[in-house]
Image (cartoon, rainbow, N blue to C red; front, top):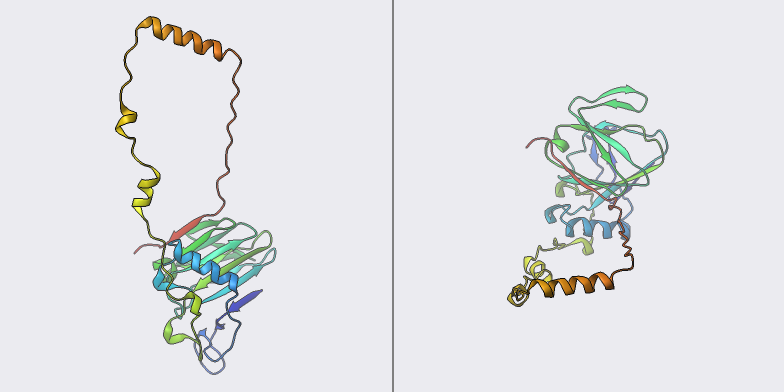
Length: 236
C-alpha cells in the first residue's frame, strides 16, 4: 500500500499522452505534523541540505513478500532525497543493469542494508544513473521517502508549508566544544615534592590496610544506537 502526501505521481504515460511524473491538477493530503517534525530534523541535523527541504513524501507499507521493482525516481523531484526505514530491516539494491531473478527477487551490483531507523540519502549517479529496488521483504515494513518537488512541476495551487521555511542546520560551535573540555590549568600540572623511601613505604602500608577488604567493580555497557545514516552517490 502506498500513501502520498502533497503530491500525486503517475508512473506511466496517461491516456492523454502526459509523461510520467507529478500530476499537477490532482489534490492530495497535506503533510502530517509528525512528518514535518522529521523533515526539520533531517535538515537541522545535516542529513539533507537547507536548499533541498522536502515538501512531499510517499509512505510505502510492505506486507510480507512485497517488493519494489527496479526504477529511477522521477526527475520532477530534485536531488538529493532520502528514505527512512521502520519496523523491520531489509536490503536495497543498486545497479545500472538490475535484473529480475524470480518473484520478488532481483540481482544488482550493490546491496545496502537498511536497519530499522536508518536514513538512506540518495544523490548523484545513485539517483540519476543507477536503478534501485527492494527485494521481497520477510516481514512487515514501512518506509517514508522525503523529496522536494521541482518548482516548475508543483501542483496547481500548491502552497509551501510555512513551518518548513527558513530551516537552518545546527552550527558546529567549536567554542562550545572547547568550553566543555577546558585545558588543565597550570596549578594542576605542578609536580608534587619528592618524598623519601620511608615516607612512600608508610603510605603504601596505610593504603594496603584501608583496602584490605576485596574491591568489586562493575562495568555497564550501552548498546549502540540502532539508527544509521547512509549517503550514497555512485561516482561523481
